Image (cartoon, rainbow, N blue to C red):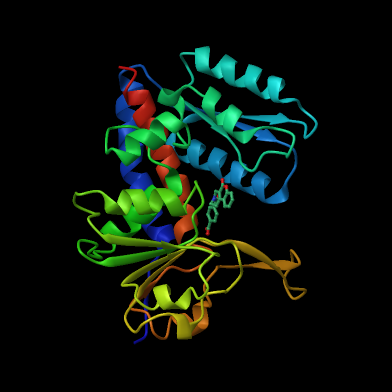
Length: 292
Ligand code: BQF
């Protein structure tokens, strides 16, 4: 089978166009949604991601601020900044760009964000709400993956979703969201990770395979079954002297090989990434809406 490529960029653009109208509605009611992003240090990938978020806000008419803090900043300094945004009624969404430097306790920082402004959905209160299916903020990448499946008309009910990777940011929340007993979910879910002696035993059973391991092209054609739907969450920088930047982006899936067996596959770039940004905007607009 030659796979249909899921155009995440196009789906993201479509959703953002729809969301523009929601922003206009809120502005008419006197509320301009606002997102404030804290960036600690100068990690090159993080700088790209933060820039992507600011530009997306601009496009939709969402107000935003980017707050750069030196790598050497103490945890207290970061908490002080968060406290400022927690108190500011003009700020609806607060996002601390991850990863944080090693000397900062990530858990302490995420715990400090007002859960009602936690548009990344990483605060334990929002994690709990997700697990018990109560209204809250869903993490952006997992929610974006669900929207990609829904908007591509891919049935999840009763399907075997195999997730490779168990991170708090992708693997665990994808499992929780697709397990929920509701439309767009209701899957049978397996989570596989590095402790498995042979991951391919599991990946070969997937109707839908979600890969978030951070290792370039580790899922190869021999590890999947014919007709599988493949969602590639990986974004790896691989050295490539033929490129202007000196690197190219690859996913965690060997796209060339796996796309010959899959029914649907997401590309990298232009697959899950743009949906992550879109669901961040969705959460920010929702946070603003909840204040009226
Ligand atoms: C695209 C992220 C790993 C660790 C921390 C569009 C993004 C990426 C790719 C983007 C990501 C990945 C983000 C594309 C935000 C997604 O066209 O393929 C957008 O900006 N992302 C992040 O904030 O933190 C990360 C991945």
